[in-house]
Image (tube, rainbow, N blue to C red; front, side, top):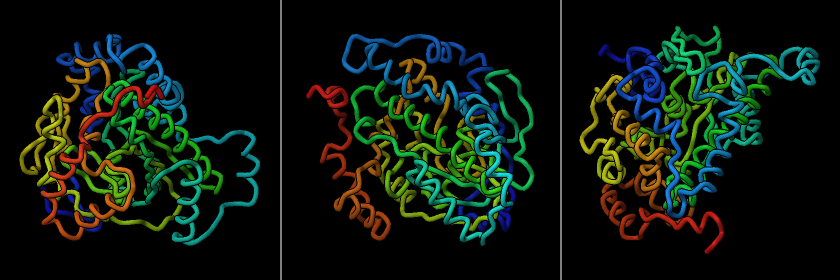
Length: 382
């Protein structure tokens, strides 16, 4: 790999020297790579009802209801520039306001403050702003609707990203039912579609271009890191200060001049070196127990940066076997806690006194945070 560029040094963490092809992302790859046809069919086409609490029709129904806005109107997992994630347009009722009065002007700092406040009012739980590194944008898109594969570029000048996080419900993610855990995920994805759409409409109303995105178009985790929302982790997910890995990410690219936040590590990587809880509890053993590396295990890895890479093939195969998604790594992560004095103290020690990391991992296990909660808690039967 080449030496870090000045732009990469400004980012604060390593960036691969090439753009990742979305075709190789595991959920897209499963639609063209024949070796995953069985797993794809099981995951998308077969019903996984089981005769035990949390796996019945009522549980799958509420999970699917939570996903319905994303599946029907968002479609950020299927293709870019579509549905609620369309790159242009504003409702006719608002057009006359956009045409009148010209652009809203202000300093980048002033406009960043306005955009952040708007995002929080519209439903973001966390929001940050960064400049877009070109290697975070997919080189090509793989369109699940048309099965087409084509080059992908952001509109010229849309070099700033407003990155937003949606919290997933803590208690639901601790449920003993993977189906109900999937409810928490789907609910966040549907909220993402609404949020990104509304923030894009707000920026367009100011007189600027805005490109809303879910999982499409660009890599969310490095964008969120650059925007100061968190760090990457052993499980391959973003870990935030307030919610740990219990978030889903969306973003809006824009040509509105904005002041940028910056990468703010708070001890996650050092903690992950000691912890390994997610790796030990991963049912597919897709999470590495080893050291960080610059090479992932297969083509579904965006290799080149020094970090931990998950084995997406193993993870996806397990999802196909269970016919539902899995959030076990999020559930058991010691950062996955509700705010509180004890948990805030633990986060302080992780950042300031990493010598306590091993003790904190042990306490997390002893205090039972890795245990699941009964399904009855979700449905109010106990």
